[in-house]
Length: 165
Image (cartoon, rainbow, N blue to C red):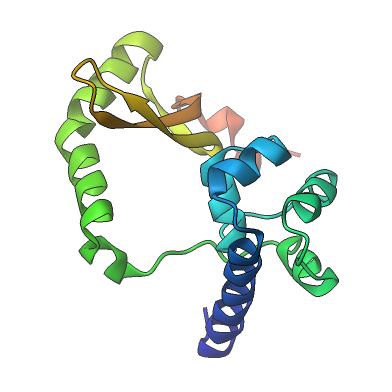
């Protein structure tokens, strides 16, 4: 992404965060009002997901200070990226550490239960929930709900470029 676009997106995100703050609502409250997951609401407000026309009215209702230009900008395909410095934040570092620590075992279970494949991060839902543990202390539950995508055998007859016309 070029510097100009990055600065423009940064300004839009700032305005979106201001609209959220003005509402006095959390991502989870906005999610409950819109039918979205709380993580998807946060992604929308950070310009990491595209607002669909069918959801725009509900989001505007939840965030009354959203302007027409912000809603229009949110409906444009975003430039999905992340700041590499985010890893320095302790919450993000620990989340990354957990995925790295448990990743090999999670992959093994995916392969055992589904076969050779991966979990989609495109056909994907994510949420964060607060629950009370058996010890009475607050616990964080992060749900990754992604479509299973099997790897395919790469057969030459399936390659369009190799088909004889």
